[in-house]
Image 1: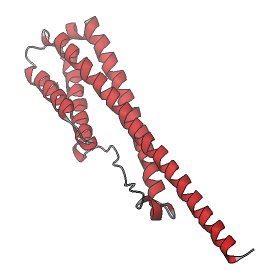
Image 2 (image 1 turned 180 degrees about the vertical axis):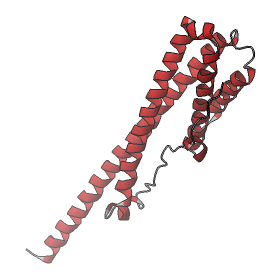
Image 3 (image 1 turned 120 degrees about the vertical axis):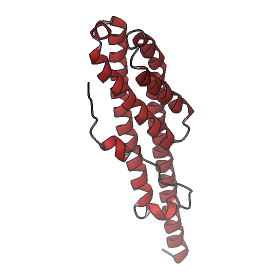
Length: 183
């Protein structure tokens, strides 16, 4: 085999490697976007349920006005959030305010027995579980993508192909602390 043939084979292998790498990175990047979209769907679902929950609670919890205001403010922040980090922060804030509402509701036996409240509480709890699962799935895909672009020899080509690391969905230090519930 002559030198020109060997160079052609090596060039062909490199081009094939780059094509396969690029397609794999595009697939992972799209999975990251899809995973985030799944979180977004659940966050929207939770935001849509909250006004119904607040309305069903208002009549019972006249003395707990700040809890309801905090939920309304957290929901407003969630709807204004645009970046992954802003949505993560406002989502975590909203989760905390909902925990407060459910804890305070323990002081209202009529509310706890109200069928609408129980149904909404169950739906929001289920949605919170879906959000948690979606966050975990998103972080798994982000880890796979980031690992792919950071390992050798992919890292040599990924940067050239304009692939950059994605941000994981992480809890803040305040959210890692134990929640204090007092009656």
